[in-house]
Length: 226
Ligand code: C5P
Image (cartoon, rainbow, N blue to C red; front, side, top):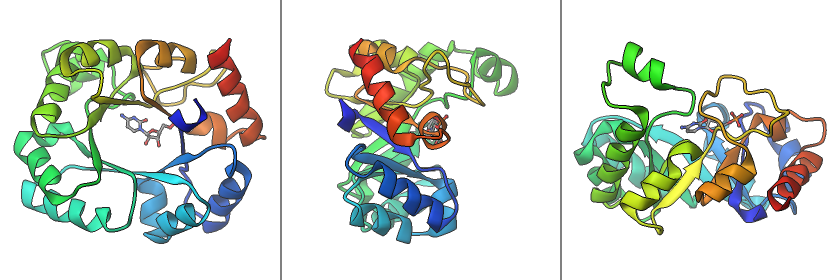
């Protein structure tokens, strides 16, 4: 189970990155480098993660015209990361181009876990329900040849039913009942998320912002086995 928890290293200072890496080495095996970290520390962040033995999900959520995304996927796959992603809202052709650009495991973000039905309908003007819209984006990602999607754990069962069990489900928006939710809206606990069929959970602030990241990581693992 511990290999299925991806810890989001949302930091922008090398010393904070190295502190977390040293603390979590031997406990976590998979980390996520997102925009804040990559834009601050650059490809060195991937090298530092690899030097400490971590698998890396490079979460840059590419969303641009197909040509740009294809070439960017080609560039970032050369960094030797284990998982990369694009935004499914970039469309079918963009996702096909991303697939064409690299052999790295590639997934698409459906709807951010910080959005809810109200933001989708009233702000973005998407008339479908969040679940139907997420399923639609997941089906497009599958059609484009991607390996899976990022969604809320709340949508995993339906996505697996539609796209098959082998289609990867990576789910952020994970909180223990006692945790602060911050800017996330569609949240679930780690044990609920695994019960729904999530393949990987992405957990950031609950672990990295705690006084003992290792203690919190282990507490999360215990909560799954309860
Ligand atoms: O701190 P927290 O656990 O909320 O962090 C979640 C991480 O997952 C963040 O790094 C965020 O960028 C990422 N993420 C997300 N929702 C998505 C895709 C990625 O929260 N749909």
